[in-house]
Image (cartoon, rainbow over all chains, first blue to last red; front, side):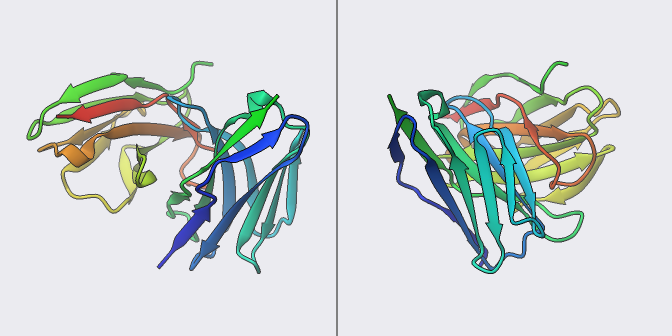
Length: 113
Length: 114
């Protein structure tokens, strides 16, 4: 069956370090992969989109990689700050223009000062 | 530009009742998707509407339905509420159809079923 896995355990890191979050998927052939940030009590906020033919995408302190062979995406936040503390969700878009956006369970990041 | 708005923000209902939730997309956005978020299941896709037509549907029972109006505003309805329907219901809008587009989420409606 189709599955998206993100680390269910919270990730705790020190301010200034690089946070790396993982998104693994099975039995999918996603054409697009997106990352969202969600703060408690709020809706998710779009961060980055990467296409299947792109290996890497950057936006300010954020970097996403997409390895369709390993079926994995890595999401990096460099020089992390306490304000980066949130839950990060990966979402896959399947093939076809009428595909659904499927979300992982999310990983909670805690950046300590 | 105003963001996606959802009303009401909080709702308490009892089992067996029905509920209607409303979503106003960002001005100019023509596609609206609905999601259910629970601690156990995470964010799950309910349905997507574009130009008043349902384009896609998730794996939810027929008690969950929706519609979109000509001004792109959307409503979702849940009939015969069950305890398990307690969740945060999120809507998201995009400029055009296609879930690959960046989704702009509203703040959600927190539904509690007693």
